[in-house]
Image (cartoon, rainbow, N blue to C red; front, side, top):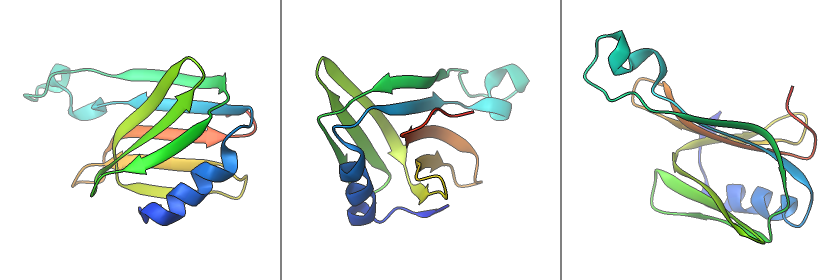
Length: 115
């Protein structure tokens, strides 16, 4: 993954709009959560292979960024993303990594289900 270049990410978001796509959205504080003895409140969310069609999407902010996808009945968004890649399967993979490289948030968009 590489640091986000907003114009590049926006172009990939635009390519996938108005198509049936699968979303993977995850937040985590994983191995560094309070139940492992740290001072961090443990919270997380996870959804995989939600089939959606977004009308438009947008990346905003100065970094870390927020990516929002406008659905006919609402929004999907991830806040705190700072890295991305377009992989060999044409999937847009966005991640928010902390200063130590640990995952805090992931938003992935694919025309095929994630395995």
